[in-house]
Image (cartoon, rainbow, N blue to C red):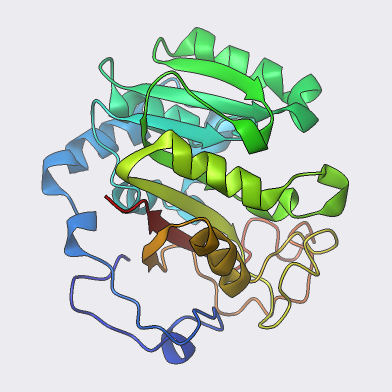
Length: 257
């Protein structure tokens, strides 16, 4: 559930261990956008979605995610490493024929994942695949939103060979002034930083926030829609006992302007 404007919670008390550097967290009531709720609902009901992805909706909370990302018709959005396309298949109907979704596939995973993006581009006229280096990603128009779903933690793993500071700078450059950078990822234990990214596939929210803000972004809020306080953060997100039900944080950052 997305908090209304003015609901200010102390991070240590309300976020189930998600560190935010001691700052208060305020999420705008504009996240609930009545003019677009029907558009979001139609995207969730779109028959082009894959049955196995629809089955994940109770855990992934697509209505909350679309509202939090402030998705609306006509926008341009990049979905960074969309893999099979759970979110791309939601974004495309929302932004509609006047908008566009860029399915950005990193060079590191292109051999396997270009085919996924090409399938989505063949299904949705407003989706196109872009393959390239994360550090130099660029698009043919300024973007309203860049989305990264459960992928950021992979990019900090040394074997991926990503300069994460350069990646965040490229996202900053790709966005319009006022554009949003929305990141969903698996929460690590407090103090873990990026140390368990390669083993547990988690990242500490506070460290991710520090890295993104270092690129010039302003923290713009979070949602607890996919938080799971019972997750003790000690297991790999692929462990059978927690897979699909890990504690996940969703942060929204804004490019000033």
